Length: 390
Image (cartoon, rainbow, N blue to C red; front, top):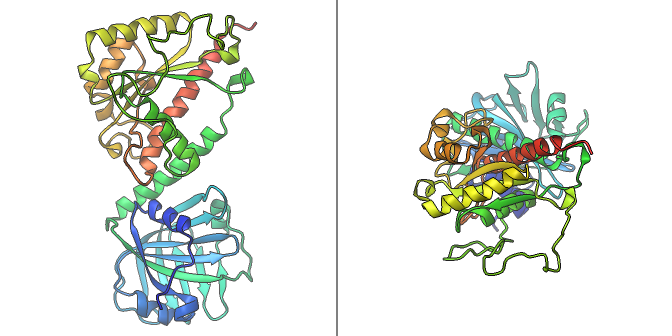
């Protein structure tokens, strides 16, 4: 009978996405193959990159190890590029990681990971007693509670298939996930300046097919934790989205028209949305229309940003620290044109790649989308802060 993992489908997908949408093949399961480091070694040696998954009360955590373990003896040790991770078993399935270099040791039926970044810190499993020792620093960073008599429920080891066998790649993926989670927490915690309004209103304006609905869907997908298609996406001679239609203009006679809108009913930020690949080909008529709209926006004192969608390669947009666009991206003609034509500062020209035909989410793509949203919040706060005191 085939041996199956204890991971749920969602939990397994979380691990796969963390490693770059890879495949996981179960090699060892302690409750089936025996709680023994010898049994584990016999089933897992020479398998390439592996993930050791440990089930512990309300947490699932473990270690990813990059490298090929050769013949392993009872006292085998080998340095590896690795990271320690924790999956919180809640509605959001939040993944937390710590990137480390480690040495793995098998000795007297104990599996131990020594982490060189922290002196005398180690993660240790005693297979005879089902005991687990978790370093205190990891308890704090990964929100894993443990004590001297903690036990683990199950231990599984997977071979990771389809991953780039490069330490730098793993480092970037895990740091991207950490930065993505940090950005998401910031955006979730956002509150408008001085609580002047309970929620902000951002208007997306742009040519047909520029990516307005896709951006809306992409933002919602990140908050939902899975891809969603709430707003209809497509392209046509006329827009799929009905915002403002010349055939059906908004007039004071409209039943929901507000003659004297309060601050909460006003638009607080306008985002001009363009397909970055079509920016150089915008017609004179379209640009004239956008400049006329911008004139009205400026007269109202509303905040403005530009959003360039459909960037070809997210990985080439950001610097290694994921905090800023790299200079090569900023110098591209499309971004310079937006700066010259609309006069929007480079810091308010945002670049994203919306989710379209993808089946899985990407932490680097999420970073661009969340960073754009965060800049819109900042622009809105500037608008609110500049309002007259009364």
